[in-house]
Image 1 (cartoon, rainbow, N blue to C red):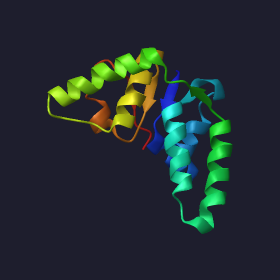
Image 2: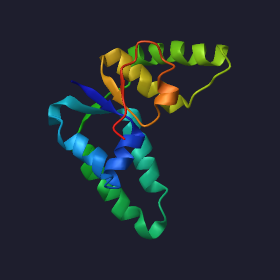
Image 3: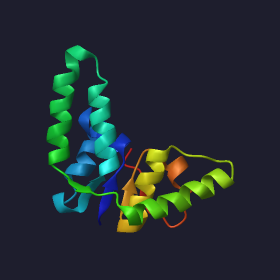
Length: 133
């Protein structure tokens, strides 16, 4: 099964959360992806770490990201995301825009999104989800 790892799952791996690390290790490397949006969020987090730890965090993220395939966010994804976000806004239930982008990627690339935030992601009809916690 092909999966897109949400940022919170990647953070669990980087922090060594055993259950999540074991689930990732059980997957075939060519079956796990991240969105370029998650790459952005991970590097942003590393760049916001306390200065004394910033280089170490950046190196950890660099190694982790290099171990996964990165899916681009292109015009087709943007159009799906626009519809998803408009739907949430029209219903008065907005969701983080980065989560909208990751959900759009999951729908476009037909991948299961692995997230600890199933509460928000389940609002997107047709999106396949897993929670590894």
